[in-house]
Every structure is written in C-alpha cells, then in structure tokens.
Image (cartoon, rainbow, N blue to C red; front, side, top):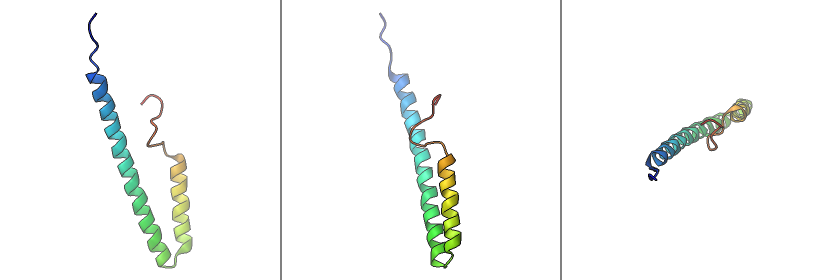
Amino acid sequence: MAAIDPVPELKAEIARLIRELEQAESYELRLRALIMAVKEQLAAGNAERALSMLNAALNDFDSATDVVVPSKGS
C-alpha cells in the first residue's frame, strides 16, 4: 500500500489560513479607520453624523460574511 502524501493538503490548509489572516487584517484596518472617523466627528460636535456612521457600520457587519469561519464550500 502506498503512503498518502499529506503535504499537498497541508499546503492547501496553510494557504487558506494565510488568506483568512489577510482578510482579518483588512477587516481590522477598516474598523480602526471607522473608529478614527467617528472620533473625529464626535470631536467636531457632530454626534448625529457619528451615530449615522456607526449605524451604517453595524449594518455592514450584519450583512458581511464571517471572516473567521469560512462558509461551506470554501
């Protein structure tokens, strides 16, 4: 019986994890940018605009695909 080479599967898993980390890093950068923009609006006295930005962000979060847990078929 020939031994099964786990290397291709391992490489595929590593590549998937790298893609996942890159997506998570991108998500983190967007969150940091949003936080800074909201702080700027609050500092300028624009509470309504800040709340609107946060509501839009919550809507985006709710409709976004989960970054950490891949969807079926990934």
